[in-house]
Each structure stands twice: as C-alpha cells, then as structure tokens.
Length: 487
Image 1 (cartoon, helix red, strand yellow):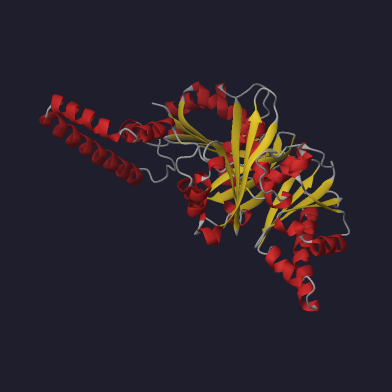
Image 2 (cartoon, rainbow, N blue to C red; image 1 turned 180 degrees about the horizontal axis):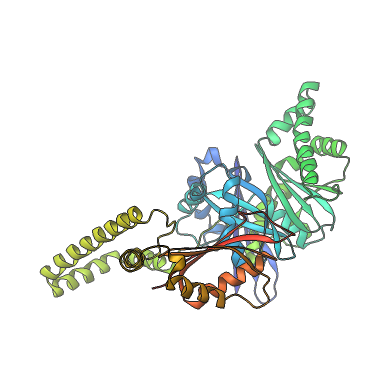
C-alpha cells in the first residue's frame, strides 16, 4: 500500500508541483511527478490548478499548498502563558494591534520560538482570508491537508536534516519576490518578504554600475532587517551561512555578489539530495532542485507529518455533512416532499410562522438588552441577565455593596481562591449583574488558576480576565476579574 502527497508551491509568477509516493512497508519515498506552470500563460490560478489536476500524475493524493509570503504578515509576540490551548485562544487578539488589515479578514497561526518562566515567545503569522478562500475554491473537490507560506517549509526541512545549530539565513529568490527566513538555534525567529526577485536582480548581471548599485541596495534591505532583529534581541549572533533556494539561486553572478556583500558562505539548497529521495528511473521527470525545493518541502511535510504554519480552517462536522447531502440533492428533495405531505400543509405553515416569530422575538430581546444594559460588554443570556436587572430594580434598591447579595457572591468568589496564592485584592465593585475584582498577584499563572476555579464553581455565568490597568509594584502583576452572577 502506498501513500501519496502533492506539494504545490504558488509563487508570484509560476506554480510548482511535486507528487511524492511512500511505500508503507519499506518506508521508501520517491518522486512520481513534477510540474512547472506559468500562471500568466495558463490564465490564472484556477486554470493552472485545473490543468495540473487533469494530469494523471496529480489526479489523486492529499494536497499541501503554500501562499506567497508577500500577502502574509509576520510579527514576534511575547505572551504571558505557556499552555498551547491558551495561546491559541488569545494570539489572534494579541496580534490585532500589529496588523494592517481588520482581524476578521485574516487567519492567524504561529510557530513557537522559546518558553521560559511561564511565558512564551512566538512568531505569529496572518494570511488574508480572501486569499485562502480563493485557493480553496480553485482546488474544490481535493482534500487539502494544510496551507503554508513561502520558504518556511524549506527552512524547517533544513532543520530536520544537517543544518547547523547557530544563526543562518535562508533566501527564497523567486521571479518577482524574495522571502528571507532568519533562524537561530534551530528555531525560525522571523520571516520577511521583499518586493524584488530574480527578474530585478538579473538586470545587474554584466550591466552598468547603476544596475549593480540597485542590486546592492536590495541586499542592504536584508542587512537592515538583520541589524533590526539583533537590536530587538531576536538574534544574538551574526549568521554563519546563507542558504539559497528558488530560481534566483541558479545565477552564479548573484551567488558571487551575495557572498561578497555578506561575507558569508553561500550554499544552494537541494532537498532532494539532502533527504535521499529518488527520481523514477523508468519514467524520468523534469527536475531543477532550487526551483522545486519549496514544492518538495510541502510534500515532505504531509509525508512526515512535521509541524509548520497552517492557514486552513477546519470546517465544523455539521457543514461537512451538509456538503455530503448536496451530493444527493435529488433524493433529499424527494424525501423532504414526502415528509411535508405526511405532516400536512397546515403544520408546515405554522412551523415557519413560529420560526419567524421566534427570530423576531430574539432580535427584539437583543435590542432591548443592549438598550437597557449598555455597560455589559458581552451578551451571554439576555433573558436571564434582564431578569436579574429587573429583580434588582424591584427588590434591592440602593448600593449593592451593602446588601446580602454582595456578601454571598463575594464569599463564593473568595472560596475559590487557591491557598497561599499571594493574591492581594485592591478593589471591589458589585451590582445586580456582575462582580468586579481588582488586585495584584505574583504572576499571571496564579490569576489564570483563580479564573479557572471561578468558572468551574458554577456560581458565575461568565468570567473575563484583563491584565494591567494599574501600577505594578515589586514585580507583582495587576489584574481585573469581571464575572456575571449566575441565576
């Protein structure tokens, strides 16, 4: 039995594809097909993929794509958590202030850099949701295992082979753009895309001093990024090697100029040779290592289940079931017609009338809730929250801080506080709907533990945690916990 994976690299000018086959019994991996398609000549991405998937070498197999790095944003973030689940929940909101696009128009993923003392350093990446959806639509009908970005899969493959442990740079020089991956101690610390590629750099080969100067100016952009990363503490040492991949790596004058400018050994990456992958002897395929490295790295990711960025959003099970029903639409229509005939036209009309009335009622409740409780930032259960508000107005006039509800809820909150936690409460605010606690704690993990205990206790319908908001004294972390009373 054989496993087949397709790696498809979508560049600024060309689409590169590699089909890998792995013999499950022997573990031997081999290339079964490769393709290089001019996107403009083929009529765009959708036409290029249609032509590719019609080839017998690419008709089957799971697919892993890469998006151009120029359409993605990359930022270094420091988060006060170490749990992967917590990081996944908050990274989108931590990245939002650094993005040029609205947060609901991007898909976010990250790569870990380091973790110590309960904090985690990550490289966060955001791809435009529009680009991902266009790719999914163009590849409709194929199973997509992951969607990555330029150069990062090649860098991670180098780390899995014999790449050095120190600091080095990988340059993926495409036809019209270049992506740089900065690596330190076997970890990707930053990715940056440049709006120039082999077409721009090749103009300086044998050209005038002016065109040579333009090439050096492009190199200086990489050097400036290197110095900036050093100033921010992301790179502790200067790079020892410069790896090249992409079409630009084939230019000997370009390699010579890079070596002279950076004063580093310049090495051309050949993943096929590094990983010991064979080409078919009976039916040889066209192969150019630097051009096909990225597509090969994508296919290897699916074959070895290695980690990387993934901008593909999993669809809920309910949506997948609906897609399956659409494939049997005629039979579904017949069954629905028989069903409605059985229950009667009268019941059907009433059902839809009641559904419409319920929708209008929910919308009216939501409007009333927002108008009556503008101070509540999150609507959990508007009916129950309004009932609590009315009860307070009827039975509990005056300040809630002096009433029995405050004492009861305050006791419930304090009973959940971990023993010997070191938490110091500096302020309390309570009303008929919520309880707010301000304070200080030795670290963020202690506050997170208290929040988890409050959620499990069941005495509060919603618990929100905010950090900062006050002066930190003697290294303590300030926080604010806001929770809604459970009815």
